[in-house]
Length: 265
Image (tube, rainbow, N blue to C red; front, side, top):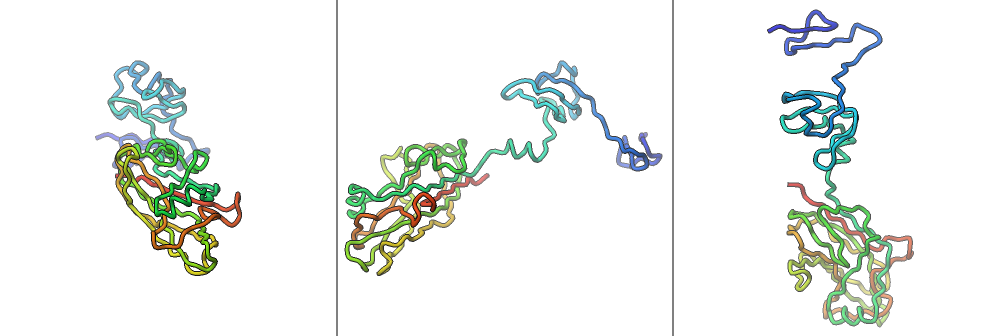
């Protein structure tokens, strides 16, 4: 089989065309055909393109699924013109899989919340849209104080909150449980999928402590809900005012964080 060498008399044995600029100065590059395609399905500008044909598209054209970018090297794959992607483009097109909440808002338990928690009933940890630090609208939606899952997948969950318990008798101990609860009934019923019980030792009351839930993996289906709740075991000493998700320096310290990563399958 014949081979063509430009700039060399010994083209590489594996090539049909070998362009060698090692011996010339200044160096020169390969200039592919430049065209103005009308979309990524255009078969009129270049009639009946052959699969693997390579051109340089100069203008942006088309829209939606037929969009073709300007100043891009594209290859005909028998159906569409596909970009020869670079790293910045891959980063732009890559679907986000992280969702992060981070808040400096304090939750000083109200009279009603104290009444509930002292009856060992769960009190929901609130979130707001301003707490969204890294968004992922493909997989997760913040709805009130709950997270709604949009994509069927396994998710890795982690987080932490700063909590302070104040008890009636100074020096007494108590206990707090932080739990993650899921619902597949649009919030009608909830089941605990993870909990972390933290003892508040004697003389540790009225001091901020960080409570974390380490990485764990759980499966969620579309429209499943997730919430963070706090409650107290019935045998633990009751909480009084100035208890809740509180920090030492309000407005500066982070009160709570939550991270969810969709596991790609």
